[in-house]
Picture 1: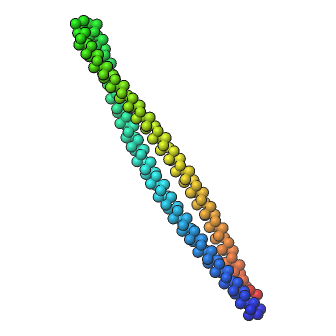
Picture 2: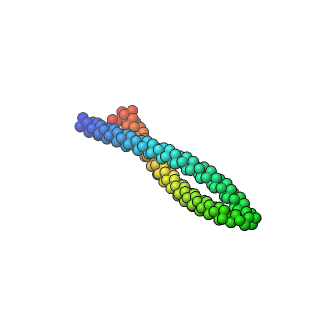
Picture 3: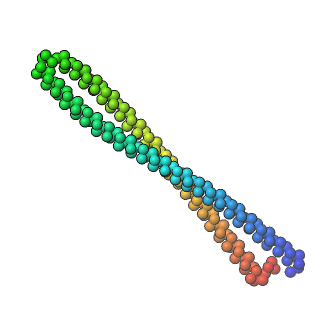
Length: 186
């Protein structure tokens, strides 16, 4: 083999090695960017879960408060029923207490009206709670879908990295075989 042929072979090998080193550097940069994106997505996902947990805690507290208010309302209805029964008995037994009965009736009606308004407020609050629950479920679904996309992207990156590693090993084996056989471009 002449010096020119040897120089061409050496130049070719050096160029290939330089290209290989450049490709490896590019892969490292892409991998670093991918790791950064994955870390940011993981942090955002964690923040989202923490936010959802806080909202769920608030929702549970609100539900407990609503349940307690409903129990108080039920007790008020029982009290009101007792008062109405006493009023009916009084109406039958005392004719001269008619004026007082009418006054009591107005108070009961006012209380009934207040109870109806309270029940309306509780019903509206329950409807808002159900809407908030649906919103939270939709956000959880979106987070799950985002996590699935991220997992798929990571799998593709891993596969690409494995393929690159295999090609690198093959290139190294070929180069080593050429050098060990003393061929060096001959």
